[in-house]
Length: 320
Image 1 (cartoon, rainbow, N blue to C red):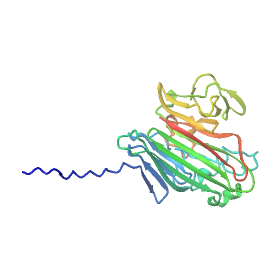
Image 2 (image 1 turned 90 degrees about the vertical axis):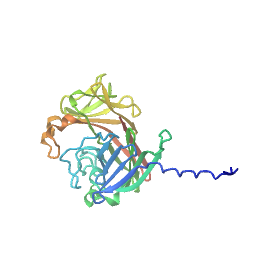
Image 3 (image 1 turned 60 degrees about the vertical axis):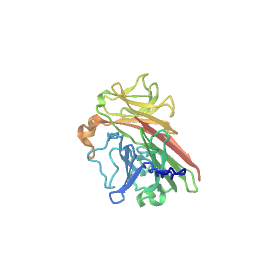
Image 4 (image 1 turned 30 degrees about the horizontal axis):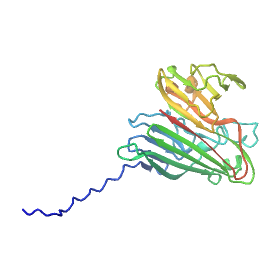
């Protein structure tokens, strides 16, 4: 056999494309879901831009959602992460928001899905997407007539949900698109899933000032130098001494379940309805309060003021 000096080289194999995050719009275009190549997932209802599910790669749900949560757009969703804007609770003495229903209109308005963006991690073998960011928008033009009448200001909101391999980031940009100044409050009402509330503790709120909305919503208290535990109905607004950059951690027994860091959200609301849950028509099962705790990052102490054309941004990262 003749040995040829120039043998044809083997054809180089075409590299397979890196795995990508899958984003789907379903349920008659009412929900947006995303799944990372590694298996983590998130689902957002366009009504309220409410996050209704967040699962790790093993499929374990991280959020608590009531079995009787109303998902048809007729009322706010009980569970997940609803959005509070432009008022926390009710504010009858604040003229601009006095006519609004509890927690404002963001959680009861239909948002627009603006699209997705992804990032790749060089640390993964396949170079696939390590996160996916989903953006949602709401403006004054999209409000119901009742909401426009109750809060007649021109605004624009962009809400971003970023699913990572071990975290969920939510952030909101608020813009005054009108010609006059207005004030607002904002909060991310996170319902975190736990196995047993009796062994749950919340650290990062030690020696912090707080208002107890159950016992005395007027006076300010200082929390003891130990983690917060839940032994009854709880509804407190804390201003952590460590500031937003210091994590607030939720532990179950000796195991850390969640860590929450905040950006420009100075307050943390801790809420559990305890046995009062039984009187809530959309709260189920009745004993579900044993499996959830709300640790809510917000700007709810006083008011944020935006002059014409100004913007404000705040957010949180929940990791596990």
